[in-house]
Image 1 (cartoon, rainbow, N blue to C red):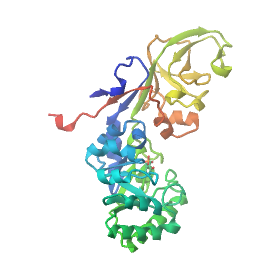
Image 2: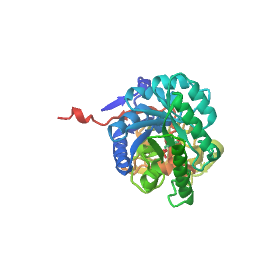
Image 3: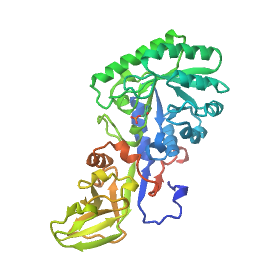
Image 4: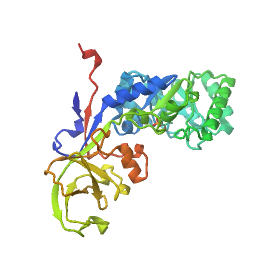
Length: 380
Ligand SMILES: *Cc1c(COP(=O)(O)O)cnc(C)c1O
């Protein structure tokens, strides 16, 4: 089944297009669920890592995930119809916690101020206390953790909150042997002990994201929060997962040039021989990193060819050598790699970044086409 997003109706058929393969997401979810000792929370923040939050959520829930996680409350609202608990963990103190409580969204509490704000909202909010496991980013400072737990317990007794979870996050899980992981595991267990000592009984205790889910069962506790793995990114590089995005675009024009022809802004590249150049309408406004200029490649007629000159906002130039290509013919910028096309991992390496930044950065100008997983129930 192939669906075209509502926003994409009326776009030219040959325009740049991002294909999302939900069968890959289904397969990745099954791998992650088989590795996790506890429940699997599908993290669908940032529009499902650029793959479509609701599509990613539905697919993950149909293949082993039982919960959903996002950063902001605004990301939670569209997921409420899916029938599973949704946790939102990154909100300012003046976020609409009353709406969260009313609509049944669980929220993370990383500070006393957040606890007061959540407790002040009418109704009893389900909360996950968030401890900083050692990366000084989000989560409560361990120095104030015991106090936060006791205060939360008092709010719980007053019926203002229900502490259903304790969460932490690992700063170095992509390097499984890093001693930072051992420290974080220890700190998380310590945090759980303090929560218990304060009289709290959180049923969800979660520390692992994708990398630790795949490499370290000691981090699993009762739940894993996985995002990157769902879309085929394994930060630990230990497990083959399947990429779900393919980016293609048509050739706009082809020109024959002489040796020594400068290409693009700043003449960053000059041809070394007579050659054919193809123009493709994708650039950094569409999420292709400008930093990949001089290294990137695309697949043209089954062969990899270099992107030459500096990537522009809207366009890039491919050196075809002595090969030709038809106008309007499709070029593959990246995909799972099955046909020899570059992968998101290669684009990330060319730009000195990580795959996450590429998949979350594809611009709104690119049409999206979603290939769904056939519904098992509708099969004979
Ligand atoms: C994004 C995020 C996750 C998911 O991490 P992945 O490595 O993408 O699986 C888990 N927990 C928190 C707090 C996050 O921000």
